[in-house]
Image (cartoon, rainbow, N blue to C red; front, side, top):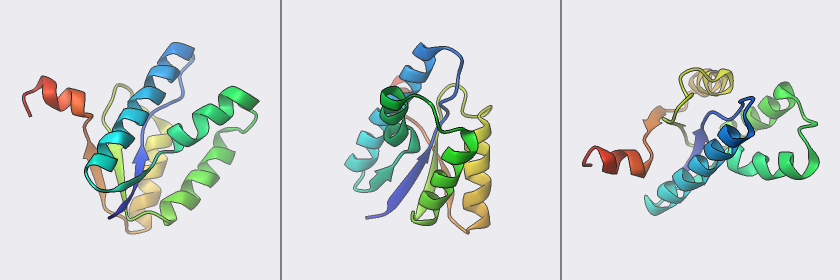
Length: 118
């Protein structure tokens, strides 16, 4: 069983987009569990904290936590959903994982794969 760090976009001015991205990450974690791995998603972990306590932690504070978790994972997978290729956080997580020597892969949500017949 590998520990997978799931990088995915989150920040957006529209609260509904953030909620949708959170739910996409939750579903992806479920898919990763079904593949026999242990996922860690900073979005799944931090979204409820931000909702309950406000977004008091800034981007840099969250990235420190994320970098620490990357060091404890076996691989980094990038959730290919809308905004992943524009996300500053995803880009920094990917760069950090590569510096640390972790394999980095794209991960497509099950619903997208099903849409394309996979």
